[in-house]
Image (cartoon, rainbow, N blue to C red):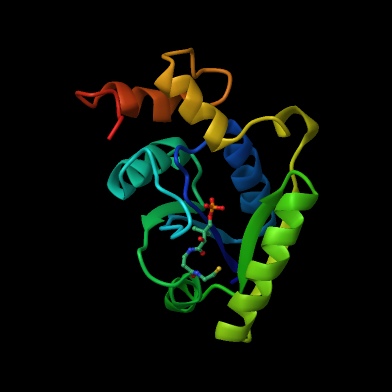
Length: 162
Ligand code: PNS
């Protein structure tokens, strides 16, 4: 069975992520989407909130499971028996970042390969950073965030802002 991990901060999950997750689910037998900690970022949403939104967003995908992991990505992939990491790339900056992370992850776990999927044109401008601005300025999230994740946010007292 070909198992892959799609890791990220998902702060929050976007329609761009969902497109990539759906494409990965069509390639691999099972995909674990994992909300993780990026030590270089200060998230708007807690890791539990990020995981909750992600779980709601992928609930309809039968071969996709959402999880939360606070350790090393390579350790998580080993635990799940995954030999592939999936990352999306929107531009050259993303590519440079992902190339570096792919080398580190392969050094940590030599059987682990990284598969880079190019973002579709319609999602090139969609980023979690931009969505956080929309949350801050109370603008509609529907064009950028899966409906199930928006519903999840609405269930929180403070609308998800931490
Ligand atoms: O969505 P992001 O912020 O670009 O995702 C980055 C993430 C969370 C995948 C990366 O920071 C990560 O893998 N964190 C877990 C810790 C780890 O394994 N670090 C070594 C690989 S760079």
